[in-house]
Image 1 (cartoon, rainbow, N blue to C red):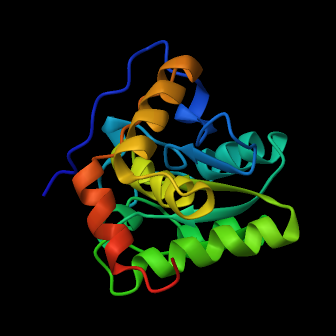
Image 2: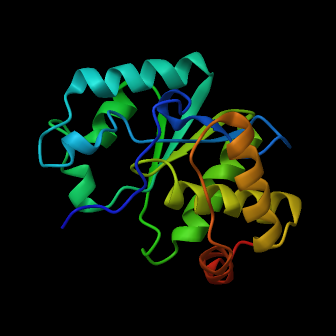
Length: 182
């Protein structure tokens, strides 16, 4: 089964990387390490592609990663992605949005990053839709925005930052409602 994600335009920011909003520079979104529609098959992403992504996020002072990839997407990597991320010195949190407790896992990672004063990046595959929902959890829980307000802010910030990102307010509301740590 192929992943469904938007094609990223040629002029998109490198790694589709940008902050969640203009409110802070703590939580960011990105495409996955080695993102390309051409390598969405088992073992297709080289360690060098992961190392390049790690270097790019570290240049932005990122210390923590929230990975929202599904099992079949994690299989794109020649070597296990979590192992590569952790051995580079970045802290890893992995979940899928449909996993039990996913919202609490993501919110917990944000709160730990905030407490440590460390920047954190959320990624799915393209860094557009699932990443947008992750960033939406930050904006709703940290700043008290409604899912609709968070979705609007994510869209406005994405346009300004030249990234492709959106958060479906209905899905964000459902994700938020599933959280026990609001």
